[in-house]
Image (cartoon, rainbow, N blue to C red; front, side, top):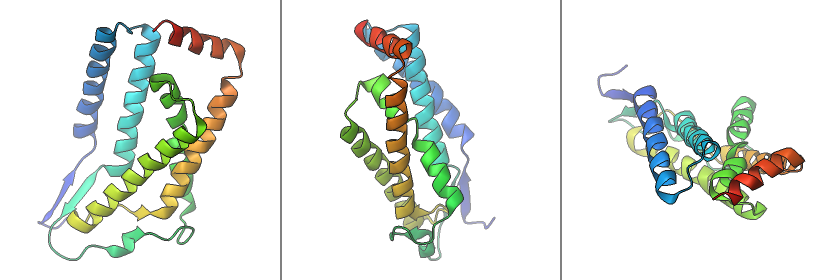
Length: 180
C-alpha cells in the first residue's frame, strides 16, 4: 500500500451502524405504538439488509490522493464489458428489496417498487463514480450493475408476490399490518 493510500474497513463502520439502526427502529416503533416482535424483527432484518448492501457496494473504501483516477473503472455503456459473476451477485443482492419495501413501508405497487430499486441502484453507481473520480476508489461504476440490480428488484418483486399467494403467509402479513 502506498503512503498516500488509506483504507476504511467495513466492520468498524457497518457493525455500529447496524446496531444504531436497531436502536433507532425500536425507539420509532415504540413511540408510534407499533412495537410488536414480528414488526421489530422485520425492521431489524431490513436494517441489516441495508447495512449489508452498503458494505457490499462501498466498503472497504480505498482512498488514494494524487495521481489520475482510473477512468476504466467507469463504464456508462450497458451490455459491454459484462462480468457475469458481478451481474449475478448484483441480481441476488437486490432480490429482498421488494419484500422489505412491502413489509416495512407498506409499498406494494409494482412500478413504484421497481422505480425505487432503480433509484437505489443509480445512487449506488453514482456514489461509486464520484468516489472513483475524487478519491480514486477501486470500485467499478457500471451501467451493467444498474441493469442487474433493477432486474434483481423485479425478480424479487415477482417472487414475493408469489409468496403472498400462500394463504398462511399472506394472513400473517395482513394480520401484522392490521395490528398497526
